[in-house]
Amino acid sequence: MNDSLKHQGLRNQLVKLLQEKGIKEHKVLEAIGAIPRHLFLDSSFEAHAYQDKAFPIGAEQTISQPYTVAFQTELLQLSPGQTVLEIGTGSGYQTAVLCHLGAKVYSIERQRELFKKAERFFKELPYRPKKLIFGDGYKGYPEQAPFDRILVTAGAPELPRALLSQLKIGGRLVIPIGRDTQLMTLYTRKSEKEFEKEDHGNFRFVPLLENKN
Ligand code: SAH
Image (tube, rainbow, N blue to C red; front, side, top):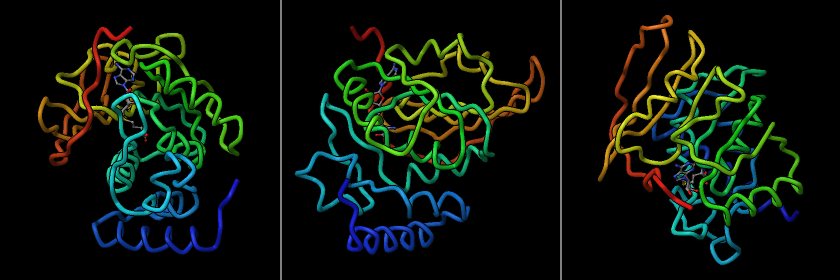
């Protein structure tokens, strides 16, 4: 895998930019500084990999903007060893960030082409998600529930109820909710029946797909 000093230099600049934009958690910044984002992009975009931008990854999807990845990861408040369900594997970049932070990651992707690509790609990487799943994130992953953390990386028109029920007590669900733009929403499970909800500003995501193949 080609990761050069030049790439490392560009990553350091990206980390600085994210700090300026308000990302504080040291471990999250460290992960962004360590993971070779250029390997997660098609080679035609490689030169731009360390700009704070989303880029196409095929199947009309995008790799999320680094700021968004950092922001969502910061909201999760993850500790090593926790189990995380990610909805929307896409390029696998966010998956790699979660693995780097020591999480046991289950990641679901709805599009076969992207799922296959991620499956092949992770074999070459030093990051080991517990499982990559081809399926529908609206349903979560009952086989391994409950999770300490759930992270949705596509815009959900509304809250998928299955996800709340698959959260441990004390667990956190980070999900962008809305149609044209999405409100970053954090749910914390306080007890069997009680959830606390916090809003964390507007973002723009590709939509969480329903009824796909
Ligand atoms: N975390 C990814 C973001 C990719 S964009 C990254 O860093 O690259 C969102 C992803 O969610 C896309 O790959 C899309 O195909 C996937 N997706 C959309 N609807 C889904 C659903 N219902 N279940 C699982 N994945 C879904």
